[in-house]
Image (cartoon, rainbow, N blue to C red; front, side):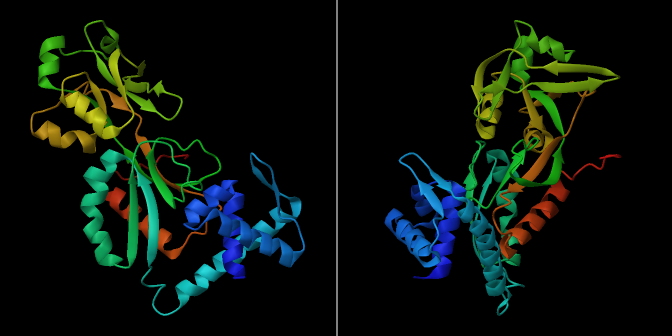
Length: 308
């Protein structure tokens, strides 16, 4: 029995709550994971997991052992990283999930510079606006806009997105140019709705001007859950859009979009990079996080606020 491989399999079963999911993320068979855990229990002469037909629960002994296993695996990773020139040249595969517009307009165009600096890191990039199960899907980190509500995750604020309201010239010619955000709720106006998370709620936008605060949801005939589809719907004239400036500016410059309510302000949308606290922050993940901070400083730096 390879004790470290068995420990890794046991830790993944605890994290995913399933032998099947653990096997999928480790890219080995379920039978192999089961055998490794059984051999580990036999060696330790302790029951680490309680198995039922529906789920796997860690025992009290298993929970204590899991904490030690995490430290051992982290130490082993550090030891391997410190050999040769690995500490100065991080290497290995990194799974990252990012929003689709951010990938298309900011991250992917900057990747040649990342690979020039870290040629031995292989990125597996998931591009989506959905909620991601970091452990269950074996994802190292995610980049997301908006506050991180999952308290089980470690999150680092990497940027603040400034936003505005935009529409096509054709839409404004048909519906008229609104003078106040509340007019977007009128019968002759439409917005493109954006759906956040699994709850299916359409996002409400809060705007400020001269002490006035307005929460706007507007009327919509289309709701999407993907940033690129959201932008495409707006460009097709299906309604007004709330867009980060980095997404809107190329289309403003081309004349495809016009900004409205320029004298109104939005609370900046925070951008976070989040990862599981149960995962060791490897050298490759550390340098990727630092690089994302540098990248966002060029496009949407964090806004310093007194008292925060």
